[in-house]
Image 1 (cartoon, helix red, strand yellow):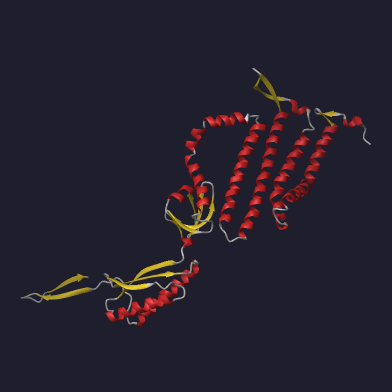
Image 2: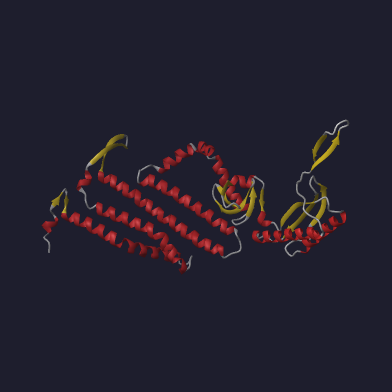
Length: 391
């Protein structure tokens, strides 16, 4: 047994006992922080057992284990360092504080600075844990939303996730001001109320976009996963946020459009259409006679309307005499909304139109030029003059 006098010996302003407590607390904290963090994660999960299934347990632990480890580590360091008192009592600076009606110079020691730093970090870790819990709740809600046919809840969950996380961040910010920096939060909020008009004017566009996001959720002109076209941008809606909506274009780029633009501009929800229109003009050579032209138009129209992938209101007609050929206009609607299937059907029809034209001994026209030379013999000599024209 070690004598108590040994622990009472003082080195560098601290007793041996204080050093043992410092090392013991730090050692235990570092050794058991992983185990304790997993245990706390599983205990917290029991609070959500009625909300989520056991299959979400691993996801919950994965989200919470890191911030809980940081919280345990910071708490361990704080408790261990607090065992060493004497060297931490040296004043590093003074600050003025109003006590009653008298300003006093308050000494600030190294210990005070360390306490504030650790309090700052511990509060941050606590709010980090809260934010991760919000992430887990949204993870479970998204899973449940994926089991339903309604896409509105798929769109609402990420929005509510961002909303609650923003609220928690604001609460955390004012908590830090109040507990760490000893700011009178009520006075600060009152002061912000005085300058609220200036802030509102500065944040006018942000407020309009926020209102636009609520309008999107209430009016539901589109949901996540819909194919839309707005301001010349066409793509699939991937996310509706506070300020903007993200759209994945057909070129696989990400377009970000302010929510105000999504509701103020002309928006086409292409996912709500029941067919895709195809319209084009083919040019036939001028060597095609009227009988062949009538037959080509009739066969094209018949094939389109009898195709299983189109509606029965397609048409083909002789439109005009073009510079290079006879223009035939073709219009039809493809009922298959899947883009890959749509491309396949359009290809089948185009190839059949080529066969129809060739079967009727016609051909497709393209821009051509012919050089015509008139040979003129001048009277009195044998000189030949070439007169070239292009048509």
